[in-house]
Amino acid sequence: MHCPRCRAENREGLKFCEDCGARLSVTCPQCGAEATPGKRFCGSCGTPVAGHLDRFAAPEAYTPKHLVEYRREGAARREVDAA
Image (cartoon, rainbow, N blue to C red; front, side, top):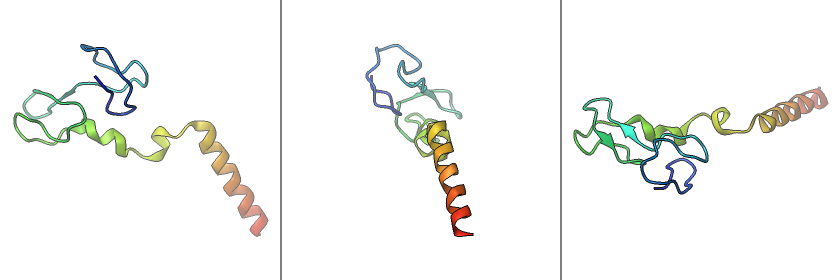
């Protein structure tokens, strides 16, 4: 089974990815059925499932902290230079 977030191969039966910790199975909030990982809607009732939204999280959620700090420091330096 491939992780919907990082695409790593995982053994069958796992609930979370061994590489990134993402949930491998998604439960439908409406009917409780297990939705197929990576799919946007429940195959049983058609309700949108939240599991696919991880890919569209804010950049702060997936950008390493050292890169965020580097970008912030660079922006602060540019502001000082422009003044």
